[in-house]
Image (cartoon, rainbow, N blue to C red; front, side, top):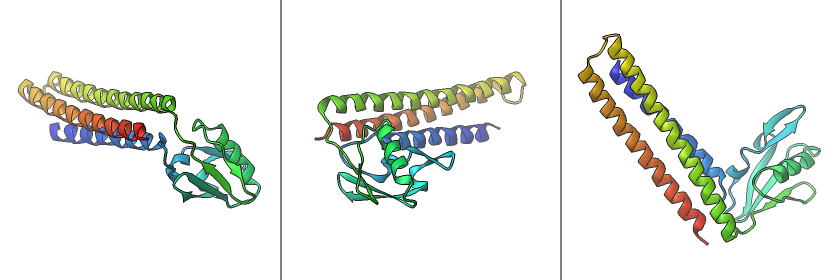
Length: 185
């Protein structure tokens, strides 16, 4: 029971770190990348879908993303969705192609993005700590039910704490990398 609990907890912690990596990829630096538009949703025949399901998203150059819709009428909807998103981007319509230039980041905007990154990191740390709490509660319940001994519980709690420390350190490392990336000019 204890090895299975540790394994499940570690898998969930790993998923939390992966979710953080995905969230950090959405926070833009000065460079353009196609993943930036992944979470922008567009109305397509009555349902909301990601942009990459109605258009090809490509890099035109280091600071410009190109979006070419598969259906001509969708171009205006995609343009509006990008403009209304929280990314602060202003696409320009070139007939059949949307050009989405990446504006240079000001010092103030960099600081704001750093705060956003720290908040995302703190959310991920809270998720890791919640997983630790849940695992420890399972151990306490197992001791109450007399399925494991108190010594086994203590050893397992120590192992879970080591896992927690490992993943919190990994989150800190990811945050430091992203903050450094943001503050580069």
